[in-house]
Image (cartoon, rainbow, N blue to C red; front, side):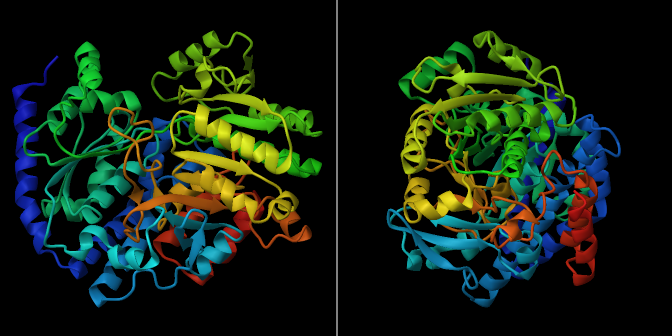
Length: 571
């Protein structure tokens, strides 16, 4: 099937307009680029209610449900948090100031420099108490190099880099806007955003939000099918491509579809002759390190892992797909029982993303002893997966839906942790995100050996008692696969996004969170006053807290904090 001449002409005209707009973008000073960002920030705030209303309709979420909170936090809140962070980077560049001033600089195993990015200010310390994040630079990159090269494309704003096509994601609705901003500022390119058809109803919202860039010719937004996307990525007027999606879609773009694409990949002759960056998901693991847990700990962490899998109905690129527990853990069965209950009792919601029924059917067909749990017909647990079985498909196939696998390894303490790290590095497909659940006492026992284990995990974002989704929401953190994937073995993709400090040659982001929520955190000596996080599936006030957090991000002020805390504490 081919697209009509009328559509082709319209797309060609848009690319021509962007080529003209690139010259205008090159003339924009850092101050004016910052002003454009702040206009977009105001527009997101003005259209946040509409954004969430349309998003909830796409995902078939009941009006008034706490689950709508997911659309606040992973939609406008994420963008409203990112823009001021990027604007501050531009201000510091314009003033010739150190971009990393105020960010703690440290060291990690393997000769890595670390940059602390969370908490960044007093509001972070209050709203995300007990959470912290750091970006690890690639081995051998010095602190001096990190400071010298931060700023990327904005170090020389007049040196623009052409037209980029962004192939927008269809699952999390802040992804496309954030990817657009990263192309504009990190790579210094003007952008044509092609929406995923799932998100077409959001077109009016995005056009209103990005009106300052659209009016000046720096951005165009289009809808359409795969043929439209193919025309755009192969267009001679397009200089670069960014995609958030599946590995199969990436390979179709780079190598071609069907047998011809497979043949091109086999001989190493890509049809795409321009740079492409990508974020493609993968099979994300959660390693549960055994310890002495209370019943409340077991219940909370079971809900935590259920959230990692079922947030957005499981349609997340870093949704936990494989849980690894110790077969020698005395509390193993109690924990697995709690995990089953958490998955079963999580709020019912539709499996709304296209193709879910087929993916779940494939998983169940390959695992005849699957267990269907409550909530939706698709919610599935695959018990007793064998990490020694090279034919186990659950380790190499991203199910992109509400399917969770459970595997066991022997050992306790460092022995178990090292074995689990080796297993996920060897067996899990992709390097986007991995989670580690470990109680405070066991952390102290492992002491200095824990950073070494984290360093050995080959993932672009690692969450320690914090779902890697927190890394996605952290504006100054990086988001993307571990560096090193090749076009013919792309796995979770190439390059990073977000990264509002515009760091050069980052390797990964590591996020740390409290093992227990308030009040048990304080009662057990953890320095955290965070109650159950608003992204938890079981949070009863997630929608009201998400709305309040979004309003706060639009206009940070002390007077708003009591309302946020009151809503969060009721969760």
